[in-house]
Image 1 (cartoon, rainbow, N blue to C red):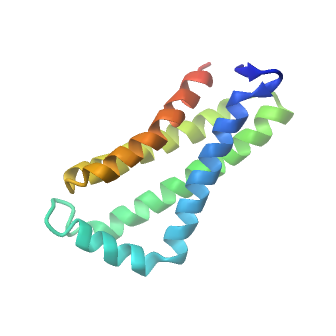
Image 2 (image 1 turned 135 degrees about the vertical axis):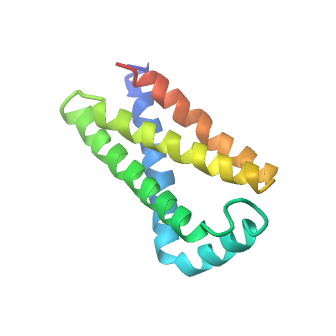
Length: 132
């Protein structure tokens, strides 16, 4: 377990996943139409052009699922001494980020792809720390 003077690095990274994915998932739910309109235009000249609503739904569900798994993982980490649900949250978050990265690369939005990598790095480090 990574520790800095008794402070757990895993805690910070799990909390990072919770905050990042819960906020993003809620934003997609609350601003569905705006997100759908923007993404439809964003992917209008790609292989995803006819699939944007279903893909947005999948990403939204995965983001919220990542946050929920990581949230339970925080509880489990401190009160049960287990890292299993935190690991599930980090795995789901990693898969979600890779899907978002693929979308940005296909849309040739390289700056957006770079931003996703910024989120992927700490998530991958969390996966490393949570290894059984």
